[in-house]
Image (cartoon, rainbow, N blue to C red; front, side, top):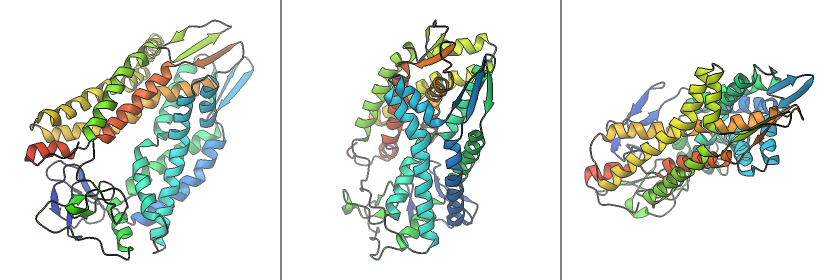
Length: 411
């Protein structure tokens, strides 16, 4: 069983390579990373998870920024940015900020610490496999680095009209982000799953035979084809040769995102009121305002994250879906690169949502000036979520099925 490995992205069956520590093994067909061998991965991820949990407390308790204008002072934390939007009636956007900037990052650290500690202790604690599965599913939904970029954009917007000072929390947040990125980089998923599998009392099923085995989409365990629809003996995820109704889900979510992109760009996302007067502004208005103030690089960042990336994701996913539906078999490796980019870049579109939350929390100076969140932010957040889910639901192995003329499965 342990002598074979299947590519997670194209389902190519290979002999398991011997990978020295510090090196990678890539799929020869689609270029996906099969194994990322890290030195002392278990011990290092445990240490990083503990350090991250320690920094998480000051990063959320202490102010990230403080704004002062005409003797009035206001501070901002991640929690206050979410609550400010909730007070403006944007409960969905408020919930997303809480999830992506507080709950998910904390949960990831707890799960990674639990799994690493279990493996370090040489004992399989209860729920270790489930914790590892959950960590993988949550991996791209932690968006602290996007929130930090939102802080930078907010400071640039405010620096000419008020005094903006960094709080103690910002230093902890930067350290927390570095540790989070390092922990994800140092994680040897293949090693973790093999260690988890070794500790099960029942032997793993034999995947040998003439038929192509099922590769578990969560832990990559090879299982016999007759286990279709059953639970993986290692991670307990549901086994399917291909993700059920993958194309249906991806098409539905993609069309939803395309439809919502119209109100997301036409409706105002926030209103700036000064001395009782003010006009709502859309995403495009914000980009134009930054350009007028000579902040071309920041305007370019917002333009890319808020308009080019969402539209690019829609176009990219459309090409991938049509590739499967119409049976296109050219440039498949390049299309896999496009899919990985679409999957990675999707989260950065949350930049505008975080900027709105930060500005609404920070600029609350009574009748002098204050900022109100508007419902365009809700539509834009829905675009980001629907396109990210469309990419997640898309099973890239379907592209290669058409290329290899394999029998079609439920998609």
